[in-house]
Length: 181
Picture 1 (tube, rainbow, N blue to C red):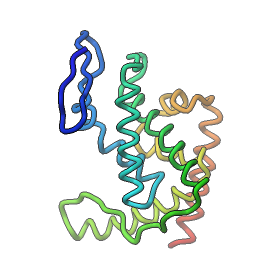
Picture 2 (picture 1 turned 180 degrees about the horizontal axis):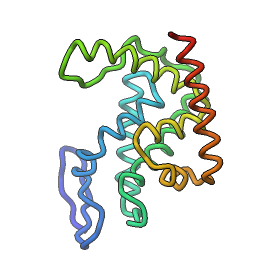
Picture 3 (picture 1 turned 90 degrees about the vertical axis):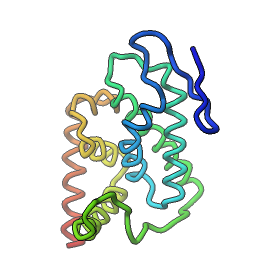
């Protein structure tokens, strides 16, 4: 293994063919996925940034254990989900730290579209955060575009349990969104 210095972090790079990609590549390719997963678990921007850093560290530490039997995206999402659950569990034990933000920042080129989408995203993220953890996990992964079989494997639950959680999550979101409309 060789080391490459990146800022204040040393990144471990596997030299073997078929090995995991460089950490810098993972951050560039999957950083937005990690940020969205962190956003779905933490509303406070500073705590969300802490969670994102914890997820990146967990991915970096777990990368040597990645086996190519699952896609790298699935592996990273599973690490992110697990770290987010641990983070939220610790936050619950400590008690509430922050209120939900007035605005959720979004990257949109058109300011008019950004304003219109902002309210919809706020409402959806707020409703998603209020879902019970098992339902939140499923809905976040579905919204991220994972297939049902990938989600089932990631969460280590049978397909029928996944379908039930997803059905309940959709019903709960629908109910919450109808009340906020």
